[in-house]
Each structure stands twice: as C-alpha cells, then as structure tokens.
Image (cartoon, rainbow, N blue to C red; front, side):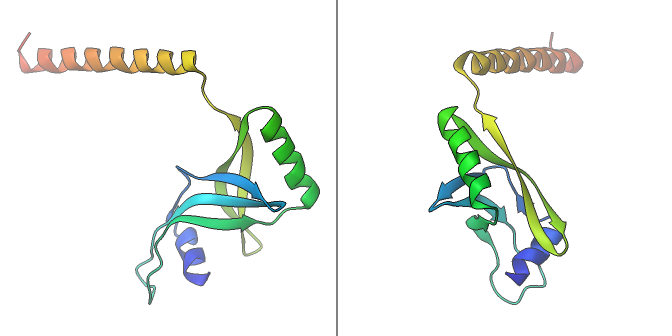
Length: 126
C-alpha cells in the first residue's frame, strides 16, 4: 500500500521478529512491523503484517525443501528498493543449540558482574 511504502522509504520498518513461511507454494513474510508515518491520513501502523514475496515457484520450493530437511528457517535480512519495488533479502539460518545458549548466558553473567564491580568501585563502595 502507498503509506506503507512511504514508511519503508523513511526506514520505519522492523525485521526483528520477522520470518518467512511457505503457504500454497508462495513465500510469505510474517511479523513485519511497519510504523505509521506522520503525514498519513488514516491509520497505517501494521503490527505483525503479512506480505507475499514474489519469486519463482522453483526457487520457493527449493528454499522450502532445504529449510524442512535441515531444520533451517527463512529469515529476512534487509529491505531495499529496486526500480521502485520493495525487495527482501532472505537467508536460510539455523537456530542456536543448547550449549551455545549456555555459553552466551555465562558470558552475559560474567559481564554483568564485572560492570557491577566497576560501578561500585567508581562510587567508592568497595
């Protein structure tokens, strides 16, 4: 829609929670957050919007076959414009495994403790 394209041109979209699925042989981009623009006449905020990604049937089935067999997910990386059309860059990504999550949690805890000690030292508490 026109107001959504204007918002995308202003950089008012968030791909943080977005992912792509294959329904009826077509790739759909889900959970795309597009904020409203100030010049719009009506309500334009779309939370969790669903948009169709136009690509060839062979490419969509190939991506879907790879994602289904290898526990991969289609993830949007960026939105950009080409010849006045909004394009989405997609990638196949694999989620973290349990041991990777544990390492990240341990690293975060260590960082939190060290910044806490530095903060107390700066205040003269320790």
